[in-house]
Amino acid sequence: MCSKIAGHLKQQDFFKRVIESGRLSHSYILSGISGIGKRMFALEIARSLFCKNGSFFTECSCSSCTQVKAGTYPDLYVYGGSELKVENIRQISESAGMTGLASKWKVFILDEAEKLSNSSQIVAGNAFLKTLEEPGEDSLFLLITSKYEMIMPTIRSRCSQVEFAPLNHKEMYSVLSEIRPDMQNMEDIIETCGGSVERALMIDDLKISDLLLDIKSRNFKKFIDFILNCNDIQIIKAVMEFIYPLSLAQYKKTGRYSYCAYGDYILEILKRLNYNINIDLARHDFVSKTYEVFSERI
Ligand SMILES: [Zn+2]
Image (cartoon, rainbow, N blue to C red; front, side, top):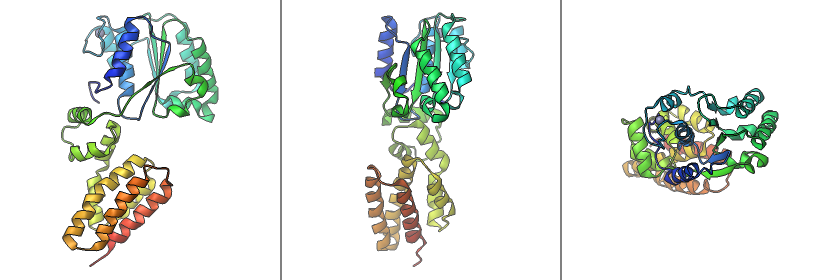
């Protein structure tokens, strides 16, 4: 993963101010689309509280920072969405009530915090609510989510929300150049990934350009399976954005009007996907139109 935080300077300033002035609250929700570094940011906040040299988002190799980076610092507790179960929440509550083992601070990072609101996790959600009501001294809860509105209102009302924006072009370029320097079509991918590193890596991993080559050679199986099973609308839009220039190139090459009409169709459906259209219908339509146009023989 990337070794440095890209962007989010306003959020850094905010936390720097509240930490330095001693006004750090007990609980924050870091919200924003997935894949923009919220978890890494939360770990940096924890590191700055534990650091022996008072570093803040800057490199440090003191023993505390080294332990935070290795995931072994005793007062740092990090839980992923599937770990937000009642037994772990009880553990969190217990640790929050005790004195820190190595620091005065205890930091709890709860990733995919919206999962605490799943009906199956409701006991855990309520247990966590109690913990938030009596957080214990010097405990900091950093909840991370890409679905802020799905977090229980009672939990939301006890936390301050800090919103994170998608990364801009320059920030995306800087992160991707570091973690995947040999990425092909990096500029195109940045254009289509909506400012999310996670999505850019997914688009690269999926080898969308391979899907397009398959379509060109009338081999549709992988493409159809992929689109019908993909639940991320941004990824479907990325495939459409990649296929659009292909349809124009085919039109230029063959002179067939159906490619030109298909290009118009892609632009139209991309526009409609920004509104609340039925995604299931849209992707079935997209698959059948693509098949119809690209399977036609001259
Ligand atoms: Zn340090």
